[in-house]
Image (cartoon, rainbow, N blue to C red; front, side, top):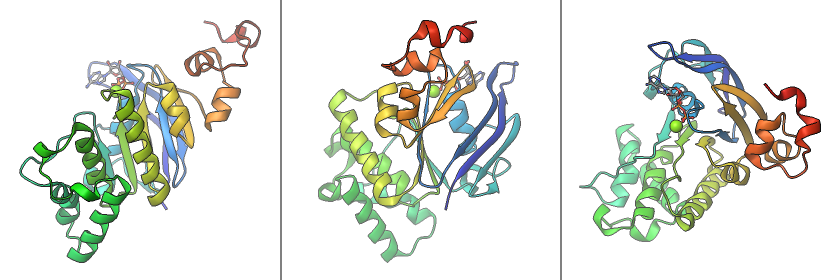
Length: 251
Ligand code: ADP
Ligand code: MG
């Protein structure tokens, strides 16, 4: 069980810029949570605070009910995938997938089983002996995802991983991720600016603007019952009369 809780989390960067304000979010074990919002809204900051790459300025973070905001990143049992992933150039696909497991001292047989299972889920089983310069960009991307999930982290964090892919590749990766989520049940926190991507993949969406949470809910709730005009416009809600419903929301 690996739920994730953020309680009144804040981030004030040195220099005084307030990036995240009073951010409270409950993500259940096995959720595919998508943190969606415009550029500069604080998405990466939230993700980096969960992963421990950024200190929090206030509040608390729990994984599995255990407070983690004082723990080192590697003690939190999370895996992160960033936009600029790399494959180890001198290792083949199998060795890349096995890398984290090896480091953590996983027994050889179990490692082999997990690598092959992960490869199957990401459609990499036929290219396990290929070197990085022998495979496509999309395959490299899938290897990076595989490397992160092969050691079965409690929480898998992805920071806008599809934004630089073409449409077909992004759809392919989307299927791969949803496959992984379905088969492994890993709790995922996925950051994107893309509303359509959020609606397509999430079991729970958290909408962020200017460092503050605007609304959380399952995709249909967000779409059909947006909490305010901003959310409605961001997700292109079809049923909303902006003028009547949200007059009080206007600044
Ligand atoms: P997003 O990922 O939604 O684009 P970020 O979390 O990167 O947003 O940024 C949120 C806010 O925090 C922005 O105003 C950004 O300029 C600021 N910010 C991000 N990183 C730093 C940093 N290292 N130092 C100071 N300000 C930062
Ligand atoms: Mg970002």
